[in-house]
Length: 215
Image (tube, rainbow, N blue to C red; front, side):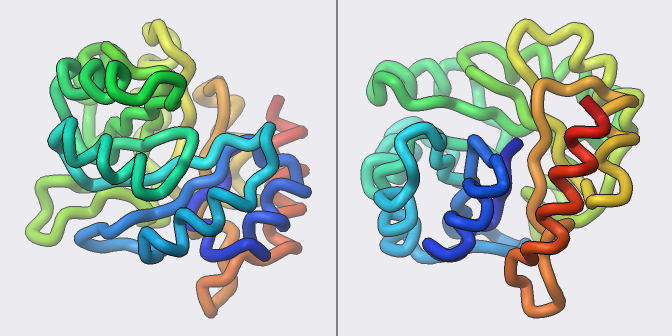
């Protein structure tokens, strides 16, 4: 399980104590919830337990820019939220030995199946989300929307790398989503937030119960 949009050390502790093995720290984005300054990302990443993978969400697309973003925040993984060539992921891997690379595929239709095949090249994981990168103001995650899980299920069936499912997951639908898609893992942000945008311990507990019932 990956809990995204972590805001501070308190939320980090809530997520990891609930069982999250990945935590997402959102860098600057054109839209969506959860971005925090790079200095805050570095502080939270430094506080994470050694068995937890801290993941920087970056909207940068050039290999050198992505590498600089990772180095500047001290994270253990990077989630590339825009479509980039496989050569970019390979360059990031060459520069950052040991850093985990998650490549996002925004499932907007059946064309996402072909996109996922390309996106798997040079990635450790795929993450299927519900953004709209080509929107007037790009949506690159945290939309609270689900997408067509039948497309995601096909991607899971064909993928050579593990797949995480994101997009509109909540305590009341995560078990159904897991049964429909059979992903390697799940990722959640807005589905666990209270009206103030803070990680809610009760929703987190209910979500984990849903994950366990869906396994």
